Length: 555
Image 1 (cartoon, one colour):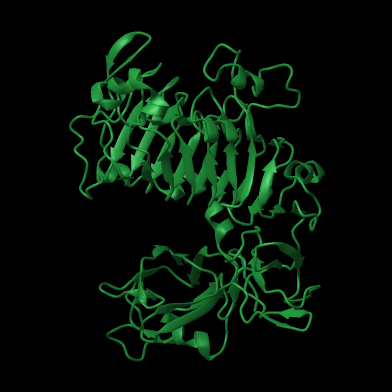
Image 2: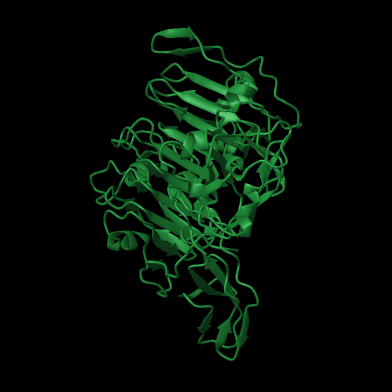
């Protein structure tokens, strides 16, 4: 089978395409062959295999055509909305999965030319969608037990080539990696694949304390990147300056925030470029857990980043900064009562800002006097602020929460003051802890900053039409076709894994580029391009996971 480019003009002969020549005027059964509607070419050949889940089918006829009234064309048995431009009929297909067989059918009498000549026969085009993959191993394996190519994440980054244009795959085995991680700007396309986000942890004790007299005192200053005694320290535990970076199955944490549950700033993650994505990751600290620092690091104001199926944990402005950041199907976890999730600082001209869609807000919602002290109880118990969605940090902040589920009540005002005035702080279909829509009537309509109290001019609640604009396609894929969801489309899991003597075998998996082998306790053993491996321990039990072309692992 072959894939035909959209610009190819193929002339088809034989019985299959002859069907489309059987077209006649309704009132003339003996219409001459000159009036028969002819299919001239198709960009996808019947029986072809195409490699993209999204594409356009184009059929070109020998004259201008139109769709007959009340006649449906069909794609996989369902009515297909087509566009017709003169002689060209186009259908845009979008499939959820690879390995799909597709059928495009033009039923009899559903197409005519402009003179009313009707096709009396049906036409069916069949093709399949399968990603073409080439067997290859991970470029680097990080394993504390010495079974890989490196024992530290940073060493694997240091050895990665510069200026890649295709994914460089780094697998990180279970373990606690106590190190700073820095992905420089000249090392794009690094894909970090963790074995298990609960057990694969990048962590350090780190603060941004300016001196020993602030919050955290001498201990915070001892661990501060601002302390000149701490050579090799950096602002966040993990800092990503390169574009086109992807991470999956990892925990990024700052141990100061996780263990101390106090300030000062203690960043776990710092993302400073465009096309950076995370799936199934954890971000853990207390204050300023994740900074999206796109303009601070020199990227454009509309740099885009994406996260899905993640856990983001903190208490004070624990995602903050700028850029077009879409986070979907994730959990924001407040580690104390009175937490504030987002502190946005978007420049004028930012198109989308912070967009949190289909997320859950969970966490601690009770006062703990041993943590807060009795002098703060009035503040905690409702005379001050309760839990809040966010506050405006700088410039023209934008933060939108869509289809949010709350596990507890938040402050009816929703938002807090900070040091700027928001451009847009809005929600759509926020659901409360009782399963009912949240009453939006008490949301903040004034904000106080440097010039005093000012009326908020944006919306507090979006309409259905406005909310419908906030799609993955509009925010993430638009413009350059970047599609990080595709990175996580799993290869099939290996089946029929069995051990005979020292030979471990399994069935080859669809879309797999290679396989990772583990002992039952999770210990990494080896990687292989083939569906067998000779193991040293014939008495152990093993599991096998397949990797797709982006490194994402099957279960």
